[in-house]
Each structure stands twice: as structure tokens, then as C-alpha cells.
Amino acid sequence: MKRIIFSLAFASVLWSCKTASSSVTAAAKQQIEVTINLNDVKEDKVLVTVASPKNYTDEVTYSIPKTVPGTYSIDDYGKYIDDLKAYDAKGNVLPVSKTDDNTWNIKNAKSLVKITYLVNDTFDVEKTHEIFSPAGTNIDADKNFMLNMHCFVGYFQDKKDLSYNVTITHPATLWGATSMTDLDVSTTNDKFITPHYAELVENPIMYAKPDYTTFTVDGMEILIGVYSPTGKVTAESITPEMKTMMTAQKNFLGKINATKKYSVLLYLSSMTESDAKGFGALEHPTATTVVFPEMMPKEELIKAMKDVVSHEFFHIVTPLSIHSKEIQYFDYNAPKMSQHLWMYEGVTEYFANLFQINQGLIDEKEFYTRLAEKITRANTMNDTMPFTTMSANVLTQPYKDQYLNVYEKGTLIGMCLDIIIREKSNGERGILDLMQKLSSEYGPQNHLMMRSFSQKSQL
Image 1: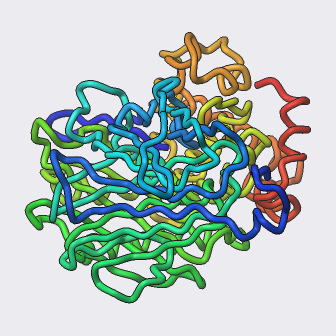
Image 2 (image 1 turned 180 degrees about the horizontal axis):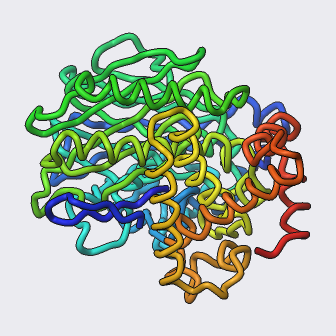
């Protein structure tokens, strides 16, 4: 995740497998069917219907995430769910009680066939919460829908590993930009299937009037989707710079190739009272959601996009390819954070700067200036707090207030490791070689190395 704070003149940027079924065979046949209705929007609320799989217990819980990977904050997305109801096959309403901000307990669950609820957007009420805009939602009927799926779809207890079949009905004038494959050929219905909940929530969709470009870089398909309220910015107008940058990134990464498709979803805010004001981006394995002000001059927007998207794209290395058990088995409602935040954000931010000089996009003076600025900003924060301790406890104070240091001191940790590796290898290897080897040897499904590494290090 990358947060950005702009001055009013935009003159500076401060970086800131389990199931409840009776048998494995029965579980394999079950899936979670979800319908999201973007046609009938009332009071900026969207209706979601979730068909329940077969339950073998008298009670079951349905949860919306408390937090999601990459945000490092408690956001309680369940607060934006209204009027959740549960039904049996005859349409009778079943008893439902809300046990906390994000969880509902449903009784007589053996007869449960579906639940329905309304979803509020977060952009409209940003003064009342701290949800980072790229992780939030926008509901603007017939114009734009920013669907971060963790805000719209939850999970039944012990059923996160079932496949999800999601149908989205929408106006024919709107097109959904996403890295998922639409299995419905119609212009008013989209159908997406993911093998489990974790993959669904990592695939945002932005619906808007079609404005997108696609290009291929070293076998990876790139999609740039843009929503600009006044049409000031188009996907075509920013694509040349994005293509140059992402080509350079792929060249820099070499054999690391974690995905075949990658989407950049750019939402441009009108900066009105009821629009997004949390500027920056949130990474996903195959996508990045980005929010910036539409009023930004093009040259400032391009510069910000280069810095932010390059950072998020490098997350395909860590934590999306190389990560600990806490990330592999992420608990959305009782999160346990990893000790490796210094790597996930710090090394990523180091790469986001290193690749630019490596690929000739900036000169040495600019590179050293950026690092010097990070030293200066890191010195304004707590320099005695172990980064592994801060990483594991980043959701609580006093560690929460030190989060932004992952982009400052975290980058410097990555640089120091790079220097040490180069010194020890007579300049033949660096930190990129290390990450390439870890990615090749362990990959996204193996957390054993990261667990072992954390036990031996205190930064």
C-alpha cells in the first residue's frame, strides 16, 4: 500500500480447508453464489444476495472483513452493511443477531438458503472513518462503482475455501475493468468464478464508461482502466508513460513473473465533499487500485502514477510471491500480522526507486536525493523501535503511529542489505538476486523460509 499526501498546489509529494459438509465429495460440489445488483441503487446502497451452501449446524456466522492484506489497519468494513436478512426455502425470515461490527449470527441455519443485505459506499463519508480510499468503495449510480470485493462480499464460518460464483448485473453503458475473466458474454451481466474467498477479495472491479487500454509486456497483459468524472484524463493519455515504466520494471525483475495479467484501476476524485480524498494505491496480486485528484496537472499525475504504481507492481515479489504464514493464512477478522512488514513495504519501496536508475529512468543525482530524503524523514520517527516488533504489532499503538516509517527506514534497510550482499559477493549479486532465488525456490505457496528467517532476525 502506498499513501500520498499532496500540498494544495501539488508541489511536493510526501510518502507518507475446512468446510462444514459431511464429506469431502459433498464439499467439492458446494459453492457460494453471490449476486450484486448495480442497476437498482437506492440512497447510494447496493443490494447483495448470497446463496448459502448446505449447513449442518443450527447456527452459522457470516462475516465481512475487519481488515484485509496490504492495509495494516483495522477498518471494520462490516459497518457499511445494512439490513442483513436470512431466509429459508419458503421465504421465511430466520433469526439474525449482529455479534460485532463485522459478524452476524444466523439461527436455524440448517434451513438457511440465502442472505441479503445493502452495502453503503465509503467515499461519501470519508470524514467519519479512516478507510484508505483505494481500499474503499464508490457507489455513483450509472456513473461509477468502485468494487473492492471485501466491502461487498463476506464469508460463512469455515467456508472460505469454497469456490465463489459472483454475478454482477449492471447498466449496459458501464464496463467492468478487472483482472478476472468475465464468463458472461452479455453487456448487462458479468460472471466471475474464483476458487476461494481469498482470491475473490484480491480482485477489485471498477465499473465506468469504457475507458481503458491494454498492452503486453514480456508475456504479461497490462490493462489500464480510468474513471475521470469530467473526462479530463483518459487511459490513452497516460498509457505511453505507464508502458515505458512497466516495461522497465519487467526488465529489472527478470525471471520473476508471478502473474499473466495485471490491471491498474485509476479513480480520479472530483474533490467534492462526498468524494474520495485518501490518495495513493493498494496492491493486489494482479491489480492495483489508485485514487488521485482529477484536478492534478498531467505532469504531476504522471509522476505520481510512476512512483505509486511502480511500488505496488513490485509487490508481486513480496508479499505476493514471498511471504510468511500470517499472509498465507490471513485471518480477516482476527488478524495476526507478520514480522516482515519491513520487507513487504521497505524492500518494495527500495525496488521502486532502484529500478528507475537501473533502467535509466532517473539519474544518479535524483536517486541519491531520494535516499537522502528518506534518511531525513526516518530520523523524525522512532529510530529505536525494532522493525520486526513494529511489523508484528502495527495494528496497535505505539507501533501504529510508526507505520509510515516502512517507506523510509524500511527502504534504507533494503538498501543496506543490498550493499552487504554486493560486498560479500564481490558485486556479483544483490538483493534482487536474493528475492529472485527465494521466489523461485519457495514461491507463493510456501512460507517456511520466511518463518525461519523471522526467527533469526531482529532489525
